[in-house]
Image: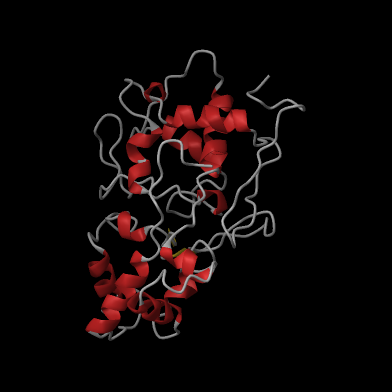
Length: 280
């Protein structure tokens, strides 16, 4: 029998931040505490890699908001990938995974990619004695669904009414972010500050892509440098300058004060760091 999948297995109880609906969970991969616990152990287990040197956490480090700080990911053999490692925080709400339009649409399908991708090699999964691959995939996907976090200064200000949580400069940046002048929130929107999301209240959302690239979340963006799908921009300041110059449309003509306000707002989206067991 699959891990904690039986009819009598305890069901997972969501403890969600304010403003976050329950994620959508596939009917054939029911969430249980036991399955999540196995998935957490597997996430840090280097037996997932061909030579025992890499785990999921090698690229998705909890201390870096589940990114790696590199421009592009490096696989188990040292080969460079084409794209930047995205955060896994709040990935439970993604409509698609990866960066491109042909990316998988479920966490289960996504987890088979690093296990088996050979162009370039990521983990080179050799198999783990005593666990079927489906059990590995389902457990990992269940664990990643629990990586939900929204305890940033922005959240305390918006959802809990803590007027002191955000500085005046950050509030000015929020107003500018939401304004038609910048258009930032047209792409980075909703409670994940990303593109479309899928959850139990909106199960049929479709992904959106801009120039073939999925819009990433801006949550924790201040601690997930470098930026863009290819890691080509090193700092948040440079990202703002890129869009100010008209990198995806018309120039914004931001003043130095407005530039600083946007940076302050983006900094306010940073959650407390995840610890190894701090994922419930």
